[in-house]
Amino acid sequence: MEIEDDSQANTYTTLAAGPDFRHELEIRRSRFITVLRRSPDEGAARSLAADLRREFHDARHHCSAFVIGPDRMIQRSSDDGEPSGTAGIPMLESLTKRETTPGVTDLSDVSVVVVRYFGGILLGAGGLVRAYSESVSAALDLSTLVQRRRLRLCALDVPHADSGRVENELRSAGFVMAGTAYGPQHVVLTVALRDEPADLAEAHARVAAMTAGKTELRLEGTEWIDVPF
Image 1 (cartoon, one colour):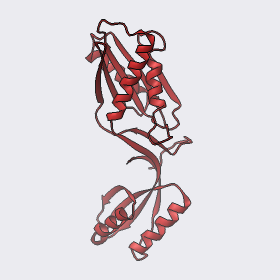
Image 2 (cartoon, rainbow, N blue to C red):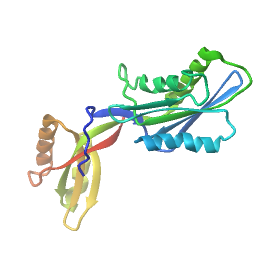
Image 3 (cartoon, rainbow, N blue to C red):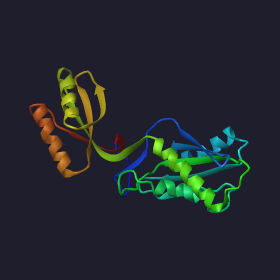
Image 4 (cartoon, helix red, strand yellow):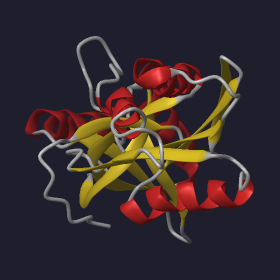
């Protein structure tokens, strides 16, 4: 299915799909509980803070930040009662300045909340900035990230008797398999390619060779797909 998307980016990095990731640090007797959530839109991002306010209702602060979209156009943060600029902005910068590969800062669709239980020792403005930045960075260090790519989907119809062989050959050739559907007459294999003319031409040639020219690729639109690093 074609997905409408006017973003300039065709790839970015995000959290692997799955449950929220949690990590805790103790800094001068204060507990900093960091929770990361993959958030495809602003509503999902804001729901993280609401969920944690209910869970950690007795905590003093629930500071938050998120960055959303392939082009990272939506960025928000909240100090939630900490001195201005000491929590939310450092947390947001830990997301936006994160190098996912050397020299690349493209982390997005991520929301983070740091829940703080005050330990009785004042950290000062500089100490708070370091604590909130370190909390987010430490959590990201331990979390699993994936590349999210906008790819061209192409389908081919293969006889049932040949589907296993063709799928294995496609995988061995480096194709990203995006789906397998079994019909009464044939199996529909869907592959995801970079949306580049050279990649499409190579794919057409490979499929023709694998199937002795009996089937061709059909263009099925584009979709954002997770690809492991």
